[in-house]
Amino acid sequence: MKKMYLMVLALGGASCIGPTAHAQLSLTGQLRTRTELRDGYGNLAPRGSQAAVFTSQRTRLSFGYQASRLRMNVTLQDVRVWGQDASSISVADGNRLSVHEAWGEIQLINRADTTLKFRPIDELSLKVGRQELVYDDVRLLGNLDWLQQGRRFDAALLKFRHQGWKLDLGGGFNQNSDAFDLTGTSYIPGNVPTTALSTKNTLLPLPSGFIPISGKNGAPILTNAVSTNGQTQQFKAFQMAYLQRSIRQQTFSALFFKDDFSKYRIDSIGSESSGYVYGRKYDVPGVHSRLTYGAMLLGKLSKRVNYQAFGYLQSGRDRDGLRIRQAYHYGGNAFVQQGHFSFGLGYEVLSGNKSGLKTGETSRFDPLYGTPHRHWGYMDYFYVGTGSPSGGLQDSFFKSKYAHKRLTASFDVHYFALASPVLNRSIDGTLPSSIQGSLGWEYDFVATYLLNSFTSLELGYSFMQGNNRLEYVKQNTVNQKDKQGQWAYLMLNIRPDFLAKNQSSR
Image 1 (cartoon, one colour):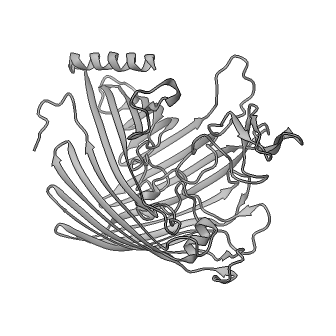
Image 2 (cartoon, helix red, strand yellow):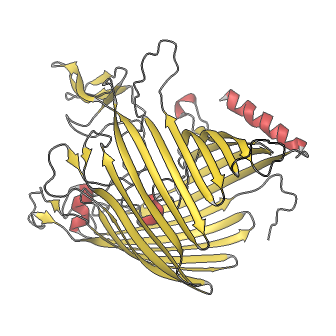
Image 3 (cartoon, one colour):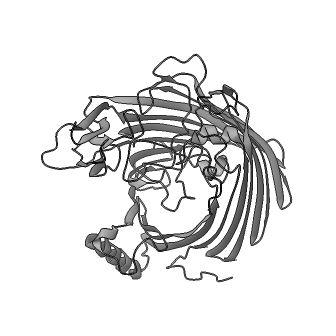
C-alpha cells in the first residue's frame, strides 16, 4: 500500500513539471457513483421479497506518458459499495485499492519517424503489462466498463499496422507466485478461502492447491468470483490473433482466441469423525485448450442504413475438460439513421447443449471475456455472474436511440428464447418434459444528459417479463419466483482532465 501511494505522489509530482518538447504527460480521473434499485435483476426474485437498494462507487486516477517511441499508462482504481467499510476502517476491512492498468507500449517501427532506418511497414509496436483488451463491439473481448471494477488482462501484445491493415498478436501466462521454493507451473485459477465447512459442519483448513466445491461434483467455492461471465476458473494462459481491414465504408475483422485451463482431479480432505470437504486438486499435468474463431463484417448499405453480421465457432475442450462439439454464435442487425433518431432490428443465437451428446461433451458456446451487459439485455440475465441456460439463447431485438447535443436516450426491446430444448428434471408438473421456446421479454430505457464537458448524469429503468421456463433454466425451480423483475439506477460520472488548460464547464 505504501509503495502504491509513493508511486501516486511521484507520478503526480512529475505531471506538475508539464509537457516538454519531446514528451506529453496526462493526468485524468474518474469518479462514478451508481445508485441501484434491484428487484429481479440477474435472476427472478423470490415471491414476496423486498427490493435491494445500494450505491456503488468507482474512483480512478490515470497517469499517462507519451514520447516519440514510447507510451505508458498507469491507472489506479478503488471500487466499493457505500457503507461496505466502517467509517473508521481496520486492516480486517481489506484493500480495495488496486492497479487496473499498468502498461508500456514501445514503438519498434514507425514510417513517419525519419530517424528510424528500418521502416518496411507503417507501424509496429509492443505493448506489455496490465491492459484492457477491447475489440470490435466488445462481444467476445472487452473491458466490461459497465461493471465498476471493469476487466483487464496481464498480457503482451504485438501490434502491426500497414496500409489499412491491422494485426494484433497477443498472449499471457498466469502464475500464482514467484516464491523461491516454487517448482513447476501449476496454477490455482481463483482466490481460495483458507477454510471450508465439512459434511459434518466442522471448519477445516484447506491445503495448498485445493479449491473446495459444493458437494462431490458441485461448483467451486471461491473467495470472490473469477469473472462476471459465470466462470468457475481463470485461464492459465491465452494466445490470440486479431485481423482488421477497412475499405471505404465497410470493415472486416477476424478473431482467433485460444485459452488454456489448468487440469484438475476431484479430491477430498478430512476424516470420518470431522467430515469431508470435497474439492478440486490442481496438480494434474497439462491444460485443457479451447479455440474460438470467427469473423465480423459491418458497414453501410446506404447513407442511412448501417449493418452488422458475424459468426464464431468453438472447439477443443472447455475449462472442465468437456469436449466442445458444434458450438456456435452468429447474428446480424440493421439500423436506420434518420436525423437525430436511429432504430433497427437484430437477431442473435448462442448455441446450447443438444440432444445426442455423449458423456463428457458440450455444445454450449461461451462468449469469452466480452461485455454481456451491452448485448443481451441490461438486466444481466444471461452470460454474466448468474450463469446462462444450458440450452443456449436466442435474442430477437428492436433498438432505438435519440442523440442531440447534451441528451441521449435509448429504448430497447428483447425477446429471449432457448436455442435448444432443456430436459425438465423437476417433480413439478407445470412444465413439459422437454422445455423449449420463450423465456420472456425485456424492456430497457436509458437517458444520459451531459452536464458539462466532464460530467454526465444517466438514468435507467428495465423491466423483465419472465415465465416458468426462465425460472427453471436459470434457477432450477418452478412457481417459486416472481415472473416480473425490474431494475432502476441513477449514475453520476465525473471524468476530469487535471492538466487541461481550458476544460469547459459548459
